[in-house]
Length: 154
Image (tube, rainbow, N blue to C red; front, side, top):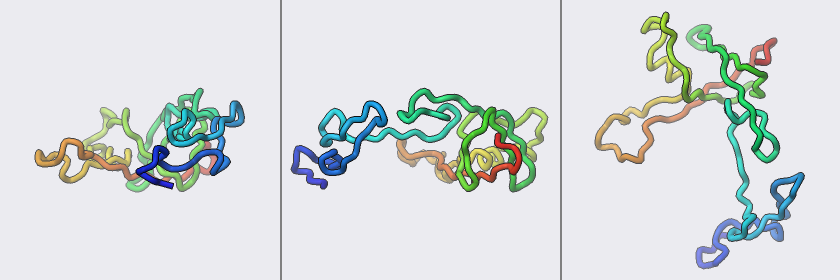
């Protein structure tokens, strides 16, 4: 399967071995060897505000932005989208940008730690150390669990 000495080095996903086709239902293409033009690289897309309701080719996506965010208590936050979102109970969500404290919020109500918790993006403890390699990530993701509102699909 993975022979580095072979010109066909890489996973063998060829149609003759796997019967896998891509870009179906139209136009279906049989997967070729790793060096072929149709080599079995399957395109994927993460559900996001700009990649919602995509077609089966992961194209022609629509937008679905967050409309409001309301902190209900120390453990629950309500997020309302512009349209029905397609999330399910138990899905994980992270909010990467365009979220900030309201100008009326106090520092106790809204601060960097609370924003990090809401977004699900946290800084590594050593993110500010000068000895850290340049390529090392400064943050990590830990998504928040989705619990759907029982009566409002948005």
